[in-house]
Image 1 (tube, rainbow, N blue to C red):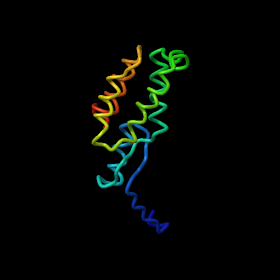
Image 2 (cartoon, one colour):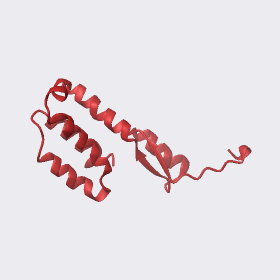
Image 3 (cartoon, rainbow, N blue to C red):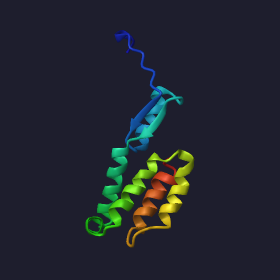
Image 4 (cartoon, rainbow, N blue to C red):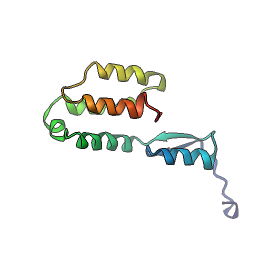
Length: 115
């Protein structure tokens, strides 16, 4: 980029949730550049898991399931120090049949190694 006289100095890079992309940001741009997951991709991941679990009809017909899924994804908007408390709150109010989704979401985005 020197030949173009462009010297990017980003503070934050938004990526999907692929570990390789996150690691590449640190390797190429340095450890001082923060990475954030894209909310769209988070919602897509939740929806794909719903499909994988065979819960799409449940999502469409059970009144409490759609807002529950939205609240899971909405944990992304909590301050980082409040996310685990928010997850615990959601775990106390799981609609029937949604336990596997909550386990997946918690393991991948809250208490797992993907933070």
